[in-house]
Image 1 (cartoon, rainbow, N blue to C red):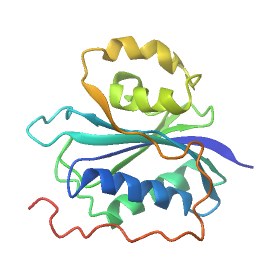
Image 2: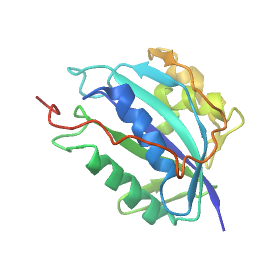
Image 3: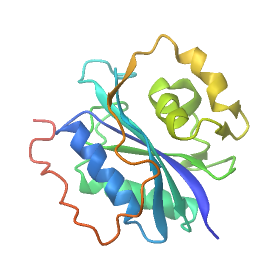
Image 4: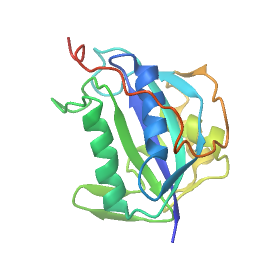
Length: 186
């Protein structure tokens, strides 16, 4: 059985736009998973710890047979391969992948809450999500579009339009390796 899952992507170190683009390609190469749609790239100011570069963000929808925990583990593995370090909350990062939605799942367990607990508070999640799926409902919270007004003070702008939407599978295509991470936190 396949499930429609939604992933939030963000980066603000080591060529953030490239990090997000590489990660989008990697999502399509996960086992039993296919990238269905991806948003444009958006720029946003940091949240929480503000003394850091702006972020590049996007949202992707995938079809997957992976269970929620297996999908989360795969996302964390992609972050790790991109040099993600968790030095403190809201720290600068080479890549951040958040499991936002997993079908209509609505639960909280140690280390995994669905839907993502802060997605309805973040314009950098809602704007790209509504670009690719304008009728999205957030389980237990209602229509995603209804939450956008509460994010009006957040500065989020499109910096690069999506090239294909929905996007065909990338399996078997020529995909270059992610950029080196030597410059991370330098």
